[in-house]
Image (cartoon, rainbow, N blue to C red; front, top):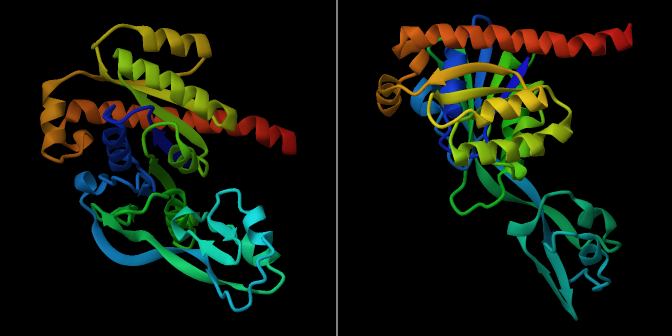
Length: 295
């Protein structure tokens, strides 16, 4: 089972929920930080990092001695990462999405594959039992989805791919990085707070993820703050609320010290154990129609 923990905005408690879920998970699991622009899951799980590798993506390298300036490459590239101006061929590696189309269409083979460093993939173990994977984007790099895919590819080559569940800490928001982070998941857990900003961005996140057709559920953090707009919205959309985490000073103190709240506060451990059980029930219920269709 792959659970993506997402949110419409930063600061709702998404990483708090992801870390605590991984902490109470009672079968093999890996925590995956795909918020590669600002990874912080490691600050709470404090993993023992056992491996690191640089991630790169393929970009074109031009040999103008072979180029006839036919524009086949430039006309193909919808991201304008390659351009022909008269008798000058220009490439813009930072705009390239690495599809390889320009290399395929060049009749003179004037383009060859090069690489651009994206960042770093690291992995290890937290608390002696939780697998851990993280991507960290290179400073100045604007494109995070390729690095996120590199993290997922690394997991696919690890024992966790077959032997354990995954809990993904997704980047906040509704842009390409957030969508890419939830794509590998079986279900999406939206974390929100009952404030005007929290509710507004929660609606945006729900609208962005709904077309993916994946089961979704909600967790309300800082429950008791604000009004009941989130609950009313979830009821109208038949979106289950699996947990409500109270607005409590002791929780904020534990978070500020970098502690996993499910470990620091016994009263909250029960909340996250129940959340874990509810997620499994939601996953099993979602898989039943698929199983029936294949029967």
